[in-house]
Amino acid sequence: MIAPPGRAIQRLGAWLSQHTGQTLSESRRWRIETSLRPLIRARGLDTLDALVAAIERDPHGPLLAETIDAMLNHESSFFRDIGVFRAIEEQVLPRLHDEARDKTLRIWCAGCSTGQEAYSLAMMLRRMGAMWDDWRITIMATDVSPVAIEKARSGRYPQMDMQRGLPINDLLRWFKPIEDDWQIADEIRGMISFQTDNLLDLKRVNGAFALILCRYVLFYFPEALRQKASDELARHARQGTYLVLGAGEMLTGGNAAFSNCKELSCIYVADRPMTLNGPIGRTAS
Image (cartoon, rainbow, N blue to C red):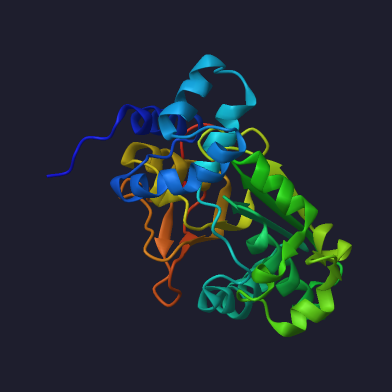
């Protein structure tokens, strides 16, 4: 029998849900104290109960935001799930290139964490060379965590991140050592607009995108909010938009805007027009 969570865990879970929509599932509860331990020590506290009490004494202070950020999963790496990136490079992007009515490519990375995914796409596009000459390419990358977005904007990563999925040719071409870290080239940074935004309450994202990546985000939401997030993704798609999810993630059954690409794992395509304002519409007859 699973023991009920203590008051501190309940309060932390409530704050996480209120500010991000994410739930503190059973599988995440056991890691919470480990995730928060550095913050607890930095604040001169001893326990989760002491942390919660400090937040309750100053509910509008910075400690709450720091606590929520520490509970979020910022796991990311360059070219994470290399098979998916190969499919994007070899199949999705060439299709979008050939089907485009004008030389415009808009990409959205929803839940971009500390930026490795967005930078991977930018390096990939540069690697593909002349086929994208004279195109207007926009990559928007959003995350609910201001801390993660600031790190992403800096484009500066420790040696450990360089050893996780980044091809040596990309490391040599696009990064330079700076102290103990690596700094990505301004040419790549300039391709991406990093913005703090919440998938459940979008403020910065507008218009439709040809390619949307929302990987390892949806499964942190309860079913009702997963449906809402799926609808937001659909509202920023157009017919022919490709949507990439994380391994094991699926769209909710109520969202019929996207169909699974059977030959491309984790990738969906919008097979009917969507409206950006109001309910998702049906294909006109």
